[in-house]
Image 1: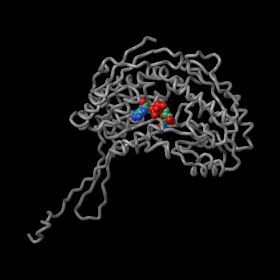
Image 2: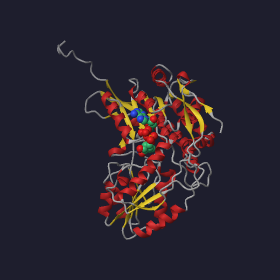
Image 3: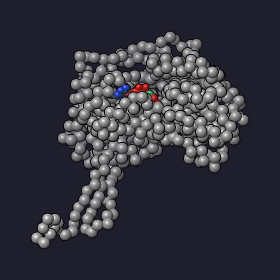
Image 4: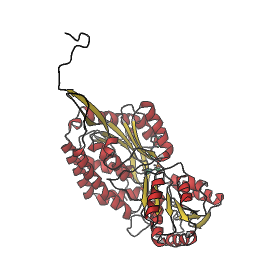
Length: 493
Ligand code: NAD
């Protein structure tokens, strides 16, 4: 592919990075540099926030009618549909995720735009039934102001859309900082935002490294930080936001349990468990990285998993038939291999995988889908987020024990339950400490359904109608339509 030099999107203009500073975008499939992304300076981040504030307060945006915001959201949705192939291809180029998954995910971005267009027009406050005579009290929802959105590399456009759709629909302005490993897809989406006709300054993109994210977070002109990424960075952001009392939405890490009871169709459950971990090469926050398997079916289930895993077709992620692509970037690749070593040293039993596939070049970042058996939940491989294609099998004997193991983690993002017993399904779902529980399915998300974590998996929820609350403040308005107000100091006057 032709190497392309990109620019920053600030105040509705495409601007050169200060001093022409750029960084390389490296393909995880062959190690080649395929694009040069702009590195925003601190001054350019400041400019982006100031122009976002101007667009929000002085420009057309703060006065834009709900129907206008909805119209722009629908236009953006339609442009995404028209450009879906290119947006999907570029994300795969960036992070080595499967085109067969990313294409569908990218098409779904348009649905988010349409859904939030509807919410832009239907968002409303309440009329409060006060027990006070001749007094009307009502609430309105007002946008919070300038939102800083910071995203990771695993699903760059989906995780951005989870933030930008409600933020823009509610009337906020935004400054976006995508991951240093996937900056180009966000810049391409900004081209569509521009084409859709959003006013200049409403949507800005500053690309760069962790320091760019840090400078954006530190900027005093932002009113909210919407972050998806690691728990370690999320905590730092929460500390800073806390000291300034600004809002956050934090979508962080996970170590989710997929619980397989002994009454299931093992083939079906195995398909669900494998899709829950190896699709996206394990690089999803909600990956079912711990499979808790009833001891009566443990051996047979492990055998089915291994057989199916060894048939997974690993290869070029741009090819529709490929079933597993690469790990997204070199640091993540090194981390995954390091965890495989740790698991071995801890005494976990390697059942399959555990290395780079033999066909893969030195420069590529392929890792075989890997399963460890007889894992104890106390091992690091069961407690720490690997964020790669590594599955732990943990046996259990009773329902209570399964729930205890599933909840014995610092994370609380998601969990899966596989059983034909409807009572057991509901009982276990109610006792799992996680933001999402799937029963006889896994890894499903939708624009209409809230998603987010508890414990160290995050704060707040994305998706669903309540997300509009995360991007608005409630204002309470009181109106006296009764007697004139008496002079409180001279009541007889
Ligand atoms: P990361 O935390 O390293 O980086 C995320 C983003 O934050 C990047 O844009 C990065 O440049 C920026 N950043 C890094 N340090 C920063 C700082 N000090 N201040 C401000 N910004 C900073 O995460 P990653 O490696 O890109 O992504 C993987 C992580 O994301 C995993 O832990 C995964 O579980 C999590 N994740 C969570 C969800 C969810 O919805 N809960 C979804 C996807 C990924």
